[in-house]
Amino acid sequence: MSSKQMGAAEWTMLIALSILWGGSFFFNGILVKTLPPFTIVTGRVLFAAIALNLFVRATGQAMPRDGKSWAAFFGMGILNNMIPFCLIVWGQTHIASGLASILNATTPLFAVVVAHLLTTDEKMTANRLVGVVVGFAGVAYMIGFKALGDLGSNLLAQLAVLGAAVSYSLAGIWGRRFRRMGMAPLIPAAGQVTASTVLMLPIALIADHPWTLAMPSAETWLALLGLALLSTAIAYVLFFRILATAGATNLMLVTFLIPVSAILLGAAVLGEHLEGRNLVGMALIAIGLAAIDGRLLSFGKKRIA
Image (cartoon, rainbow, N blue to C red; front, top):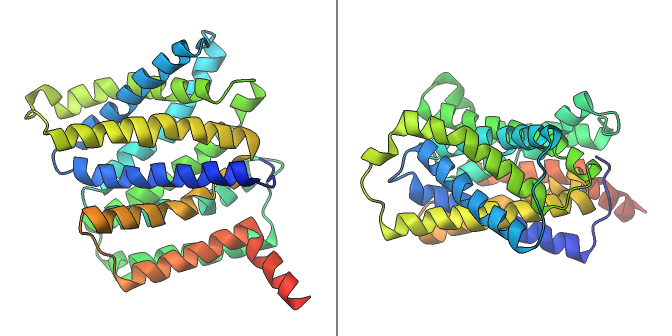
């Protein structure tokens, strides 16, 4: 997971990915009002899987059939889709989409710790340690110490989204194997959502009984398709392309940009607003990410020089 210098193409893809993933919090904000969480997640990965598998065939490619590849797909589906999607959607039934996106922005902070423990080439450095400390301080300040004395649904929802961030950080390390396996970005993107569909479909059928739900409105269908096609299918093709060309460390910086997209969408369309401590917490998380990336310290050294 070596960090590489990103060019204009990688930064463009990273910004595009942040918008697509920021939109997922907006779409979830609409869907949680009418659909249960497991149904939302299943619909998301099902329609994404259909679209991506059709695109694989249309481009003349073929999905691998060997057990090693599908074991990797299922592992990625669990870490990158099944666990975080369920936790985030459930969390958004209790907290606003903007706050959920800020909590999700802690992914690189967890990734620094996970990478130190699980890899040989991404050990903790001084600037990363500073970033982790500042970032977690931002999370604590944003949630509020008062919340620790009240283990209610809001705190549990916040912890659920933080759990999703941990799962995403593990997925970033797991996903490095696809480049070593020589797969084009489209293949693992299609493979992971296909595996996620296989895992999620029986859960949704048993837990949500979707056939008993009222027929979704046009707004609900549009939000679900937007979530599946834009924030999942297209987003994960970009995800694996950036992972292959820029590396996992740079890819994780996308979560620094996601809250801006989600907050703007949530405020403009859903009428949501954030408290002052949320904005201060986001600023601290941003400083933490900048320290992890090294840009903050290198900028300071240049100014001193």
